[in-house]
Amino acid sequence: MDKYLAFLNHILQNGSPKDDRTGTGTISTFGYQMRFDLDEGFPLLTTKRVHFPSIVHELLWFISGDTNIRYLVKNGVRIWNEWPYERFKESPDYAGESISEFVAKVKEDAAFAEKHGDLGPVYGKQWRAFSGGVGEIDQLQAVIETMKKDPSSRRLVVNSWNPAVLDEMALPPCHMMYQFYIKDRRLSCQLYQRSADAFLGVPFNIASYALLTMMVAKTLGLVPHEFIHTIGDAHIYNNHCEQVAKQLARSPRPLPRVALSDLKSIFDYTFDDIRLEGYDPHPSIHAEVSV
Image 1: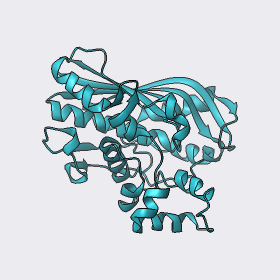
Image 2: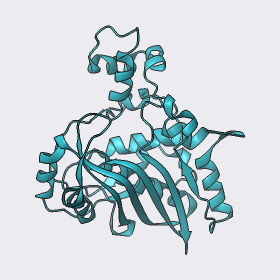
Image 3: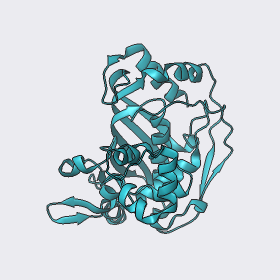
Image 4: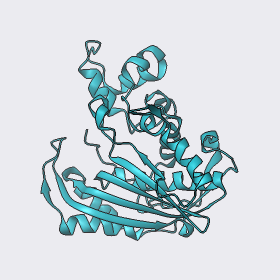
């Protein structure tokens, strides 16, 4: 994952101080691209341990069209908890609960989760039921069907950025649009990400969309080729600088591999159908998420 480390160095060397919505402050630069050849291995960071089960569960959650954190919470995924918790604190039902108490209620109480665990029409809703001028559109299903009928199409796009409902979302999409490309029975995917938390978020984003590419390729009988990650505002939060320096001092290790069950539909995948093999990273480096 030298390409990712080069990305961090690019921000440090070319970025400048920039205020942000969270009030944390960043080192920011604009416009960057990384390309990952999926034949060389699965692009999961090795200079720190990244929690692969969370990546898998989150992607399956997106694919299902779900927007409530209860599925994630029940599977031990914590990465989305802060946003509905901040909303809950503004509601009349809030009685001083800590975030751990909030998460426990989401896990144990379906009615509470339905009321306070939903993030609004975020990724899953846009992928599977995008609200347009002609009703809801299942973008992911439509793109897969188009790939089967017209693999040369230049319209293999899934868009999560829906301006009409941005205000209803707990967090507007950061990884906002992706496009597939097929040539010689090989499938590539390019993601455009408007805003990229370089230390915490980007390793998840790389692995998630590489996995999505592999899953789509598997179900269509194609060979996964490249994941291309194009980024707008690339930033390192000020409170992540020490962690970034620690990571840059480490040497990358060999990439792992991912094995997938042989399924005919991406919508049939479960957690047990996706297996990570040969992952030997450096230890985890912890950092706080800015909400």
